[in-house]
Image 1 (tube, rainbow, N blue to C red):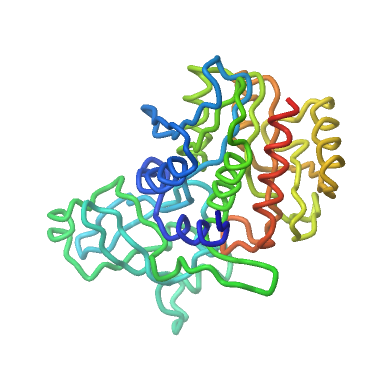
Image 2 (cartoon, rainbow, N blue to C red):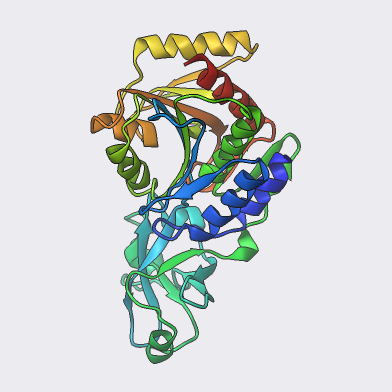
Length: 338
Protein backbone atom coordinates (compact mmCIF):
# COMPACT_ATOMS: atom_id res chain seq x y z
CA UNK A 1 0.00 0.00 0.00
CA UNK A 2 1.25 3.49 -0.88
CA UNK A 3 0.42 5.67 2.17
CA UNK A 4 0.68 9.03 0.40
CA UNK A 5 -1.41 7.89 -2.56
CA UNK A 6 -4.15 6.59 -0.24
CA UNK A 7 -3.95 9.79 1.81
CA UNK A 8 -4.48 11.95 -1.27
CA UNK A 9 -7.41 9.77 -2.29
CA UNK A 10 -9.11 10.07 1.10
CA UNK A 11 -8.42 13.80 1.55
CA UNK A 12 -10.05 14.42 -1.85
CA UNK A 13 -13.35 12.93 -0.66
CA UNK A 14 -15.75 15.08 1.41
CA UNK A 15 -16.93 13.54 4.65
CA UNK A 16 -18.49 15.95 7.16
CA UNK A 17 -19.99 14.56 10.37
CA UNK A 18 -23.18 12.69 9.59
CA UNK A 19 -22.35 12.40 5.88
CA UNK A 20 -19.31 10.10 5.69
CA UNK A 21 -20.65 7.53 3.21
CA UNK A 22 -18.27 8.41 0.34
CA UNK A 23 -15.25 8.12 2.60
CA UNK A 24 -16.57 4.89 4.07
CA UNK A 25 -16.98 3.39 0.58
CA UNK A 26 -13.38 4.27 -0.31
CA UNK A 27 -12.03 2.79 2.94
CA UNK A 28 -14.17 -0.33 2.48
CA UNK A 29 -12.65 -0.88 -0.98
CA UNK A 30 -9.16 -0.92 0.55
CA UNK A 31 -10.33 -3.27 3.31
CA UNK A 32 -11.66 -5.67 0.68
CA UNK A 33 -8.38 -5.53 -1.25
CA UNK A 34 -6.63 -6.60 1.95
CA UNK A 35 -8.92 -9.64 2.09
CA UNK A 36 -11.01 -8.63 5.11
CA UNK A 37 -14.75 -8.85 5.57
CA UNK A 38 -16.38 -5.60 6.72
CA UNK A 39 -19.77 -4.35 7.83
CA UNK A 40 -21.43 -1.00 8.52
CA UNK A 41 -23.71 -0.17 11.43
CA UNK A 42 -26.65 2.20 11.87
CA UNK A 43 -24.35 5.08 12.93
CA UNK A 44 -22.23 4.79 9.79
CA UNK A 45 -19.15 3.12 11.30
CA UNK A 46 -17.15 0.67 9.16
CA UNK A 47 -16.28 -2.42 11.21
CA UNK A 48 -13.66 -5.14 10.61
CA UNK A 49 -13.42 -8.09 13.01
CA UNK A 50 -10.19 -10.03 13.45
CA UNK A 51 -11.91 -12.90 15.22
CA UNK A 52 -15.32 -14.33 16.01
CA UNK A 53 -15.34 -13.53 19.73
CA UNK A 54 -16.63 -10.46 21.53
CA UNK A 55 -13.95 -7.81 20.94
CA UNK A 56 -11.77 -6.99 23.93
CA UNK A 57 -9.70 -4.49 21.92
CA UNK A 58 -11.10 -1.84 19.58
CA UNK A 59 -8.88 0.18 17.23
CA UNK A 60 -10.46 3.32 15.78
CA UNK A 61 -9.68 6.08 13.33
CA UNK A 62 -12.41 8.51 12.42
CA UNK A 63 -13.59 9.23 8.87
CA UNK A 64 -15.29 12.60 9.35
CA UNK A 65 -13.81 16.05 8.81
CA UNK A 66 -14.58 19.43 10.35
CA UNK A 67 -17.09 21.28 8.20
CA UNK A 68 -19.85 23.88 8.11
CA UNK A 69 -23.61 23.58 8.48
CA UNK A 70 -26.20 25.77 6.81
CA UNK A 71 -28.18 27.60 9.49
CA UNK A 72 -30.29 29.90 7.30
CA UNK A 73 -30.86 30.69 3.65
CA UNK A 74 -31.21 34.46 3.25
CA UNK A 75 -33.61 35.94 0.66
CA UNK A 76 -30.73 36.95 -1.64
CA UNK A 77 -29.36 33.37 -1.68
CA UNK A 78 -26.53 33.93 0.77
CA UNK A 79 -26.07 31.10 3.26
CA UNK A 80 -25.62 31.69 6.97
CA UNK A 81 -23.29 28.94 8.18
CA UNK A 82 -21.91 27.72 11.48
CA UNK A 83 -19.18 25.33 12.48
CA UNK A 84 -19.65 21.57 12.57
CA UNK A 85 -16.90 20.24 14.79
CA UNK A 86 -14.03 22.39 16.01
CA UNK A 87 -13.70 24.56 12.92
CA UNK A 88 -12.70 28.22 13.18
CA UNK A 89 -13.50 30.62 10.32
CA UNK A 90 -10.00 32.14 10.38
CA UNK A 91 -8.54 28.68 9.73
CA UNK A 92 -10.32 28.59 6.36
CA UNK A 93 -10.40 32.23 5.28
CA UNK A 94 -12.24 33.36 2.17
CA UNK A 95 -12.31 30.91 -0.68
CA UNK A 96 -14.30 28.27 -2.54
CA UNK A 97 -16.47 25.78 -0.72
CA UNK A 98 -18.72 22.94 -1.80
CA UNK A 99 -22.37 22.72 -0.72
CA UNK A 100 -23.35 19.07 -0.34
CA UNK A 101 -26.88 19.13 -1.71
CA UNK A 102 -28.15 16.08 -3.64
CA UNK A 103 -26.15 17.47 -6.55
CA UNK A 104 -23.21 19.36 -4.98
CA UNK A 105 -22.70 22.99 -5.97
CA UNK A 106 -19.98 25.56 -5.41
CA UNK A 107 -19.99 28.69 -3.29
CA UNK A 108 -17.50 31.12 -1.79
CA UNK A 109 -16.98 31.69 1.91
CA UNK A 110 -17.02 35.46 2.35
CA UNK A 111 -16.42 37.96 5.15
CA UNK A 112 -16.89 41.18 3.16
CA UNK A 113 -14.74 44.07 1.98
CA UNK A 114 -12.17 45.97 4.05
CA UNK A 115 -12.26 49.45 2.46
CA UNK A 116 -14.47 51.11 5.03
CA UNK A 117 -14.52 52.76 8.41
CA UNK A 118 -18.19 51.89 8.97
CA UNK A 119 -18.41 50.34 12.46
CA UNK A 120 -21.08 47.87 11.31
CA UNK A 121 -18.69 46.27 8.79
CA UNK A 122 -16.97 43.00 9.62
CA UNK A 123 -13.51 44.46 9.16
CA UNK A 124 -14.16 47.15 11.77
CA UNK A 125 -15.75 44.66 14.15
CA UNK A 126 -12.47 42.72 14.11
CA UNK A 127 -10.69 45.78 15.51
CA UNK A 128 -12.15 44.79 18.87
CA UNK A 129 -13.26 41.15 18.53
CA UNK A 130 -12.19 37.94 16.85
CA UNK A 131 -13.73 36.63 13.65
CA UNK A 132 -16.72 34.41 14.31
CA UNK A 133 -19.27 32.54 12.23
CA UNK A 134 -21.84 35.33 12.56
CA UNK A 135 -19.61 37.34 10.22
CA UNK A 136 -19.50 34.62 7.55
CA UNK A 137 -21.71 34.12 4.52
CA UNK A 138 -21.47 31.65 1.67
CA UNK A 139 -22.22 33.35 -1.64
CA UNK A 140 -23.82 31.01 -4.15
CA UNK A 141 -24.91 33.22 -7.05
CA UNK A 142 -28.36 31.63 -6.80
CA UNK A 143 -31.64 32.85 -5.40
CA UNK A 144 -33.24 31.38 -2.31
CA UNK A 145 -35.86 29.78 -4.57
CA UNK A 146 -33.21 28.15 -6.77
CA UNK A 147 -31.39 26.85 -3.71
CA UNK A 148 -34.61 25.40 -2.31
CA UNK A 149 -35.22 23.56 -5.58
CA UNK A 150 -31.70 22.09 -5.29
CA UNK A 151 -32.39 20.90 -1.74
CA UNK A 152 -30.22 23.44 0.08
CA UNK A 153 -31.75 24.06 3.51
CA UNK A 154 -30.76 24.35 7.18
CA UNK A 155 -28.76 21.24 7.95
CA UNK A 156 -27.05 21.00 4.55
CA UNK A 157 -23.32 20.43 4.97
CA UNK A 158 -20.74 22.79 3.47
CA UNK A 159 -17.15 21.59 3.03
CA UNK A 160 -13.80 22.71 1.66
CA UNK A 161 -13.92 22.81 -2.13
CA UNK A 162 -12.25 20.02 -4.17
CA UNK A 163 -9.82 22.59 -5.58
CA UNK A 164 -8.34 23.05 -2.09
CA UNK A 165 -7.87 19.37 -1.29
CA UNK A 166 -4.49 18.76 -2.92
CA UNK A 167 -1.63 17.69 -0.65
CA UNK A 168 1.47 19.89 -0.66
CA UNK A 169 4.92 18.34 -0.20
CA UNK A 170 7.43 20.23 1.95
CA UNK A 171 10.63 18.19 1.82
CA UNK A 172 10.06 15.31 4.27
CA UNK A 173 6.78 16.89 5.34
CA UNK A 174 3.34 16.65 3.78
CA UNK A 175 0.52 19.13 4.33
CA UNK A 176 -3.16 19.47 3.57
CA UNK A 177 -6.62 19.77 5.02
CA UNK A 178 -8.10 16.88 7.04
CA UNK A 179 -4.91 14.98 7.83
CA UNK A 180 -6.91 14.73 11.05
CA UNK A 181 -8.10 12.09 10.65
CA UNK A 182 -7.63 10.82 7.08
CA UNK A 183 -3.92 10.23 7.70
CA UNK A 184 -4.85 8.09 10.71
CA UNK A 185 -7.30 6.13 8.55
CA UNK A 186 -4.30 5.35 6.33
CA UNK A 187 -2.39 4.12 9.42
CA UNK A 188 -5.48 2.09 10.38
CA UNK A 189 -5.39 0.39 6.97
CA UNK A 190 -1.63 -0.18 7.16
CA UNK A 191 -2.05 -1.78 10.59
CA UNK A 192 -4.67 -4.12 9.16
CA UNK A 193 -2.21 -4.99 6.40
CA UNK A 194 0.45 -5.84 9.01
CA UNK A 195 -2.03 -7.96 10.98
CA UNK A 196 -3.08 -10.18 8.06
CA UNK A 197 -3.62 -13.69 9.42
CA UNK A 198 -3.87 -12.53 13.05
CA UNK A 199 -6.95 -13.67 14.95
CA UNK A 200 -8.04 -12.46 18.35
CA UNK A 201 -10.62 -10.54 20.34
CA UNK A 202 -9.99 -7.49 18.19
CA UNK A 203 -12.17 -5.18 16.14
CA UNK A 204 -11.10 -2.29 13.90
CA UNK A 205 -13.59 0.51 13.28
CA UNK A 206 -13.42 3.51 10.98
CA UNK A 207 -15.77 5.71 12.94
CA UNK A 208 -18.31 8.40 12.11
CA UNK A 209 -19.03 11.77 13.74
CA UNK A 210 -15.94 11.94 15.94
CA UNK A 211 -15.55 15.67 15.41
CA UNK A 212 -18.91 16.36 17.08
CA UNK A 213 -18.30 14.32 20.22
CA UNK A 214 -17.09 10.85 19.20
CA UNK A 215 -20.68 9.86 18.46
CA UNK A 216 -19.93 6.96 16.12
CA UNK A 217 -17.54 5.32 18.55
CA UNK A 218 -19.91 5.88 21.46
CA UNK A 219 -22.71 4.14 19.57
CA UNK A 220 -20.44 1.23 18.72
CA UNK A 221 -19.07 0.80 22.25
CA UNK A 222 -22.50 1.16 23.81
CA UNK A 223 -23.51 -2.02 21.99
CA UNK A 224 -20.16 -3.85 22.13
CA UNK A 225 -18.12 -2.40 24.99
CA UNK A 226 -14.42 -3.26 24.70
CA UNK A 227 -11.95 -3.32 27.56
CA UNK A 228 -9.37 -1.35 25.58
CA UNK A 229 -9.88 1.29 22.90
CA UNK A 230 -6.88 2.39 20.85
CA UNK A 231 -7.77 5.60 19.02
CA UNK A 232 -5.55 6.81 16.18
CA UNK A 233 -5.43 10.59 16.17
CA UNK A 234 -3.24 13.62 15.57
CA UNK A 235 -0.61 14.71 18.07
CA UNK A 236 -1.03 18.50 18.14
CA UNK A 237 2.02 20.74 18.49
CA UNK A 238 0.94 23.01 21.37
CA UNK A 239 2.92 25.13 23.86
CA UNK A 240 1.84 23.22 26.97
CA UNK A 241 2.55 19.76 25.46
CA UNK A 242 5.43 20.39 23.02
CA UNK A 243 6.45 17.86 20.40
CA UNK A 244 8.64 17.75 17.31
CA UNK A 245 7.02 17.41 13.89
CA UNK A 246 8.67 14.14 12.95
CA UNK A 247 7.80 10.54 12.13
CA UNK A 248 7.78 9.72 15.86
CA UNK A 249 4.35 8.78 17.20
CA UNK A 250 2.80 10.79 20.02
CA UNK A 251 0.96 9.28 22.99
CA UNK A 252 -1.82 11.17 24.75
CA UNK A 253 -1.32 10.36 28.43
CA UNK A 254 -4.12 12.81 29.24
CA UNK A 255 -6.61 15.05 27.44
CA UNK A 256 -9.78 17.00 28.12
CA UNK A 257 -11.83 13.84 28.77
CA UNK A 258 -9.73 11.10 30.32
CA UNK A 259 -6.24 9.91 31.26
CA UNK A 260 -4.48 6.69 30.35
CA UNK A 261 -3.93 4.15 33.10
CA UNK A 262 -0.33 4.23 34.30
CA UNK A 263 0.19 0.56 33.42
CA UNK A 264 -0.92 1.20 29.84
CA UNK A 265 1.55 4.08 29.49
CA UNK A 266 4.28 1.61 30.41
CA UNK A 267 2.95 -1.00 27.95
CA UNK A 268 3.04 1.54 25.12
CA UNK A 269 6.52 2.73 26.15
CA UNK A 270 7.85 -0.84 26.15
CA UNK A 271 6.30 -1.52 22.75
CA UNK A 272 8.05 1.56 21.40
CA UNK A 273 11.36 0.40 22.87
CA UNK A 274 11.02 -3.04 21.27
CA UNK A 275 10.47 -1.36 17.91
CA UNK A 276 13.32 1.12 18.40
CA UNK A 277 10.92 4.08 18.30
CA UNK A 278 11.31 7.39 20.13
CA UNK A 279 7.75 8.01 21.25
CA UNK A 280 6.56 11.50 22.21
CA UNK A 281 4.35 11.56 25.32
CA UNK A 282 1.84 14.40 25.64
CA UNK A 283 -0.34 15.59 28.52
CA UNK A 284 -2.90 17.66 26.63
CA UNK A 285 -5.03 20.33 28.30
CA UNK A 286 -7.69 20.22 25.58
CA UNK A 287 -9.03 17.72 23.07
CA UNK A 288 -10.55 14.29 22.99
CA UNK A 289 -10.49 11.07 21.00
CA UNK A 290 -12.82 8.15 20.40
CA UNK A 291 -11.02 6.39 23.26
CA UNK A 292 -11.02 9.18 25.83
CA UNK A 293 -14.60 10.30 25.08
CA UNK A 294 -15.77 6.71 25.52
CA UNK A 295 -13.74 6.20 28.71
CA UNK A 296 -15.24 9.34 30.25
CA UNK A 297 -18.68 7.73 29.85
CA UNK A 298 -17.67 4.27 31.04
CA UNK A 299 -17.86 2.64 27.59
CA UNK A 300 -14.26 1.38 27.72
CA UNK A 301 -11.95 0.83 30.68
CA UNK A 302 -8.56 1.52 29.15
CA UNK A 303 -8.25 4.42 26.68
CA UNK A 304 -5.09 4.63 24.57
CA UNK A 305 -4.70 7.46 22.07
CA UNK A 306 -1.80 7.45 19.62
CA UNK A 307 -1.14 10.43 17.38
CA UNK A 308 0.60 11.62 14.25
CA UNK A 309 2.69 14.67 15.20
CA UNK A 310 1.02 17.65 13.49
CA UNK A 311 1.25 21.40 13.15
CA UNK A 312 -1.87 23.52 12.41
CA UNK A 313 -4.51 21.22 13.87
CA UNK A 314 -7.99 21.81 12.39
CA UNK A 315 -6.37 23.82 9.62
CA UNK A 316 -3.97 23.16 6.75
CA UNK A 317 -2.14 20.53 8.74
CA UNK A 318 1.52 19.50 8.45
CA UNK A 319 3.11 16.17 9.38
CA UNK A 320 6.08 13.96 8.49
CA UNK A 321 5.49 11.77 5.45
CA UNK A 322 6.70 8.63 7.30
CA UNK A 323 4.56 9.16 10.41
CA UNK A 324 1.64 7.08 9.11
CA UNK A 325 3.79 3.95 8.69
CA UNK A 326 5.36 4.28 12.15
CA UNK A 327 1.95 4.71 13.77
CA UNK A 328 0.67 1.60 11.96
CA UNK A 329 3.64 -0.48 13.11
CA UNK A 330 3.18 0.61 16.73
CA UNK A 331 -0.56 -0.09 16.56
CA UNK A 332 -0.03 -3.61 15.20
CA UNK A 333 2.58 -4.30 17.90
CA UNK A 334 0.21 -3.12 20.63
CA UNK A 335 -2.63 -5.28 19.31
CA UNK A 336 -0.39 -8.36 19.40
CA UNK A 337 0.91 -7.47 22.86
CA UNK A 338 -2.42 -6.64 24.46
